[in-house]
Length: 89
Image 1 (cartoon, one colour):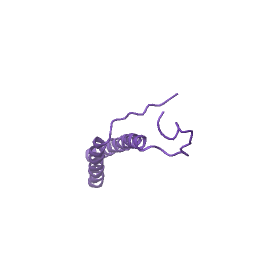
Image 2: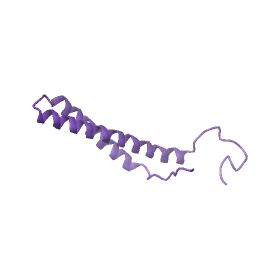
Image 3: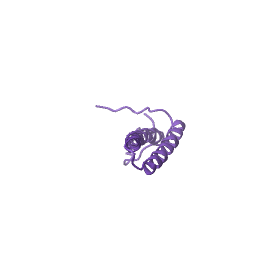
Image 4: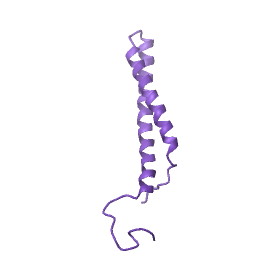
């Protein structure tokens, strides 16, 4: 074993940098999923407002902002390492 655990010391809940970076990639995946869900909801609402001849400009602009944020998150996510952490039972 390497690190403080091999020396008999405790890490006091601190996360090593390589684990923190992998976990941040998973956090990006969660945020991307959250934004994707709301993008689909706004798409449905925008289409419904257009079909029923109600004002849909606000909904469409909200959808545009959400899609730009989603695009930015996907680009940032590509810079992070792939998910390596696994859940233990």
